[in-house]
Amino acid sequence: MAKTLGILGGLGPMAGAYFYQLVTALTAADCDQDHLRVVLTGFADTPDRTAYILDPTRPDPTPQMIEAAQTLEKMGAQILAMPCNTAHYFYDAVANSVRVPMLNIIEETLRLLCEKGAKKIGLLATAGTIFAGTYPMRAEKYGLVCEVPTAAEQTVVNEIIYGQIKQGKTPDIARFEKVANSLFARGCTHLVLGCTELSLLGQTFHLDERYVDSLYALARATVLACGATLRT
Amino acid sequence: MAKTLGILGGLGPMAGAYFYQLVTALTAADCDQDHLRVVLTGFADTPDRTAYILDPTRPDPTPQMIEAAQTLEKMGAQILAMPCNTAHYFYDAVANSVRVPMLNIIEETLRLLCEKGAKKIGLLATAGTIFAGTYPMRAEKYGLVCEVPTAAEQTVVNEIIYGQIKQGKTPDIARFEKVANSLFARGCTHLVLGCTELSLLGQTFHLDERYVDSLYALARATVLACGATLRT
Image (spheres, one colour):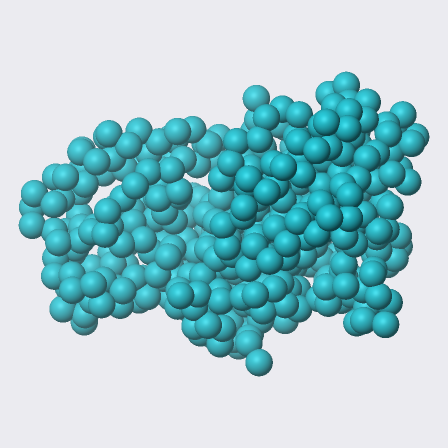
């Protein structure tokens, strides 16, 4: 019997919706009833994660994230997934607030990178994720070296996430690729789409196999962890 | 203050995920926090609606739909939307099981058709929706005449919904358009995508302005009913 999945979404809302879509698309199913039973919270009003990580005098998103996790548990979720990389800075606080297990998007992405034979990875993520160091901190145990954009390049990545994708505007793919190419030039074998808003780029633009999407990594792990079968 | 939206999804799962995505895309927002607060159930294991409508000796989906509506209310939903046309056969039972209001996809679609100046509409939907008569029953009060496919054509529509889209396969757009053209030939000014699985066709194929998508109609009405602003 497959487990009920709790999606802690809303961080941002489009990434949460796309994650649910991805989990559905990745599940082997001949009819509705073959799919996972899902509950989802999209508490979009949760304070901005990056803002708090960079400046802890700003509103703390933790209480709302804990509220979401506990709501999902009360609704019957048996396993949680939180499709937001930046929010994983708060992973311990959220995961420890419930009795059910919560998958970790950073771990799943690093595992997928290893499967793909990555050596040196470039991190495309929010300033919050970069500052928090969640990826480099865990990359080491997988034998991966983690490269980040320069300050000027990071400004471009932030602008694409906050000034374009989160506002529903068309992202500037040329500027994105300039940052990506700079990371490849520094010897990165693979680039991590380490922000679930950047995962949305893959819906519109073709990104080759050197890009590893954290949202895909989490979705794949989620299908398996819930006991469903991956669509072949 | 915008209302918390409860999405009674899972009927099917892909349509529910796409509906959440559509609501998000249609909301005017400059940042995550401008979006609606959402809770969603995706009880994919709910028995098939069409099967029960056509043969009431089959498992009744009503108890699970009521459980979903009440779960959403308990999670804080202040207004409900159920992105599934076939399930609206059970609308009264579900809507009456909770204290919060529930939007009606059939009414919202018929309203949008009127806005577009429709006179005679052709209904593309599951055999369950066709048999239940939910559209023609309500179309009259809007001054709309409702045409349905022939039995042979309906077999094609069912096959596209159940044998292709719900199974994650590429839908046969040529066969779909043959049915559509037959309805246009019978004088229909507009065709209703009256099954939220058919709404998914619009993600892959270009359907002209004579097609009115029930999922879009519900999403637009939902944004407004929750007190958010439509993106222009």
